[in-house]
Image (cartoon, rainbow, N blue to C red; front, top):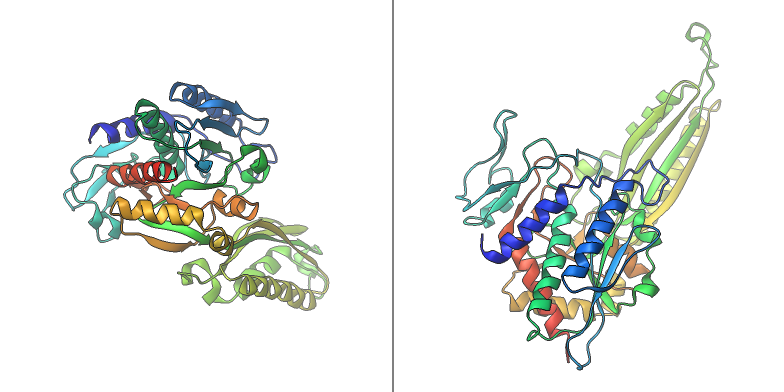
Length: 411
């Protein structure tokens, strides 16, 4: 690794040593106290790399200002990364492993567990020959999503502070809570933050720019049954477990995550709990096109009504909760963020793709609340599991793209 990559990596190793797993079942804000303690550690570090007005607010958001070093006109640019890691796999005891000078072959994550990465199963590895690849040890996430984003932003601030000859306008950083649960950014004070536009550094593959995303809601079916002894159940029992299974199996197979890609939407049934008295079936609804998204919800409501007719002794309720909406149209109406970003990508010879993310980031919600915020690549792959990896070359490219945005915004 070159010195810049080493500096970013060293920060990353320190950050992933702190377990900040979020908890979607929690009603606390943030959902886990570890995020608060990590926030204060980041706040202390921000003051050492040049940020002023550093604050950890009541919810755990960390913000700071890197003051402009020029009198020329420049917009206030925000940079975001999230502190939490997903609960789908362990975020404890993360031990990053370096695989320098990748030769294009197999990478061993954990020999005992027979865990490997290969270009045949991870096609992006073909783009990384000669890079330093980072993995975990097979027992945890790597947490590149999104602690590598934090490391890039911190290192950029430190670099710009040490190089005053690089003129830039005001840069504001925000490290956010509970991105993985989709709930945290709703508490963020956009108006107080005061940026004109922003970027989330929370994407994956080199060159992938998320300037659109799914429309997203959660869906919950609550089923109240009619229990009795199974020996005398005929014509009387309404079994919530069976009804929940019937709902899941009745949804069209061509509208599931495992059968869709690109801009195709889906419904994912992800959790069911209950017994003969009652059951709760939870899922998520995703679709890029808003009209098709609303049609999905109507289909789910129709499915609930169909099962009410089929199981008249049961009570079946359905509820949707809004998560986020597609940011594509707003970014077109207020193009400055994308114009600066595309120029920076070209300046750094990054072949890029403007993608519609099959998911959502904090930037989607921020955009819809008035802060245009596309999502740029951070350099990781295979997030949310033990096969996660990142390329330090990709990470360095993200750094330089942000540097170009900062200096090119000065008029």
